[in-house]
Image (cartoon, rainbow, N blue to C red):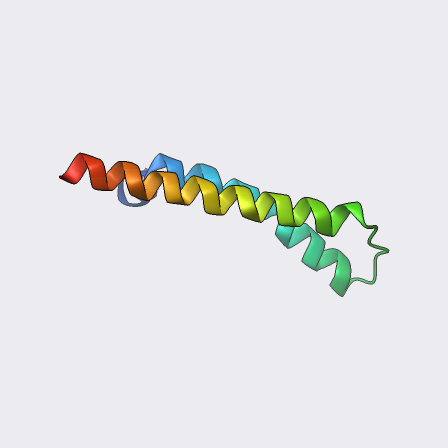
Length: 65
């Protein structure tokens, strides 16, 4: 609960999208065959995280001012 209070629920929700990134990295380390859809999906996830984080920053700025 302390982490939710400190970092915020929005941040913790976006960190859940890192799981596929870690899984892809583990697959590469373990020698798994990676198709074209895996890196493409990774890029889509990372772009989504960037967009979500920008929205959170803008929302927090507007609340503070």
